[in-house]
Length: 468
Figure 1 (tube, one colour):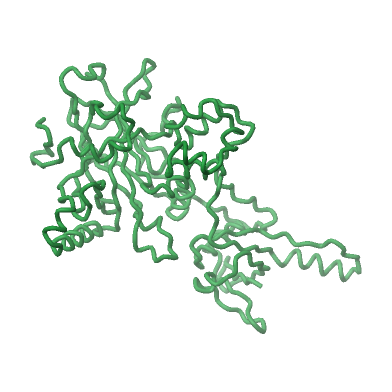
Figure 2 (figure 1 turned 90 degrees about the vertical axis):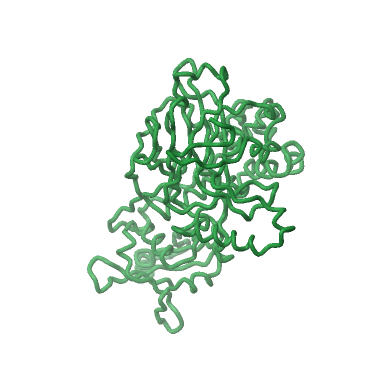
């Protein structure tokens, strides 16, 4: 293969030569500066022309469209002979580029899973791909796919990204500007036990994903903006290249692939969330499971602290903290951590140590009126002395502040499907029933309390809910 060129089928396409890897050298340890790069990965999508000279490239993709990534053997003769005639494993991930989203990734992906049940963030277009063996996608890891391939043979994988950048933007600011993602590829060779755990190479690139055809419009807009700039201004920007070279980066710190449990086979059908239907009351409905918390405990041993650092993507600092127990780490101040790890990773580590959770935008408390109120009235009628009567309330956490979201949360509380809730009303002045709207929910005060009453709707098997 000529240096700086790749061949896509019968077509020839120019790609950047190896100096492109200088983009991320500053983030790599010094000993990696002269490291041989055994593989080169080429995403066949054009880079944006509106990127300054010393910034990382940015590539726009359309949601759900298949994009080719060429897996190129970049070894010189005699390099890494142990993988000659052997297969290697590559793991593809779509992850967040922004630090603030990286340390809330679990909550972000769980929210996406809830809003898009049955969908995946990343898929392989198997019919179009060439040379990939045993492709797999774990149903619990929506943003990850993996496969085996032979470096000596032509290998080309087509990926589809189904999430769009604006799905992770704060709606209160309009949501116009989408967040950037990263496509990361980690490649491994077999160890003595036949497990693909020995790291060979990692590379990534920055992308933004738009609704279908949105990437083409954005590329055109950037090109038109650049054409209006003066020649002197244009010199500060990179040209738009027809393809995107993934630049070398640190390996992805999660080590879930090391376990011996076989990954589920790749499957285009995926499991979805289901809400049980029935006539259960809130008093008998189990609370939804809380988000998985991985807070470090003061009682954690140094070994357990090391495992926590690996799970939470702080592997690069594991040697620095190898003798620290959980108590030692938790005693560190924000300034201590920033001084040790630097500003970006220091703030991320400090927040992870403190186990801060992302607060919902609105919390309301509700209780079911009918049964509890009837019990109270019966006690009064029987002239029983009521000294400590209290109602049981349930907390409802809202993120989108919409009537649809409130309907779904109430349906979950009542253990019915959302289709069985016909309308939701709020009791207004003089007892009138006001239809709940998005705007009304957005004006609820945080931690408001409501008593719920239900009325049978005109249609069969559905209800009206009244917030009092």
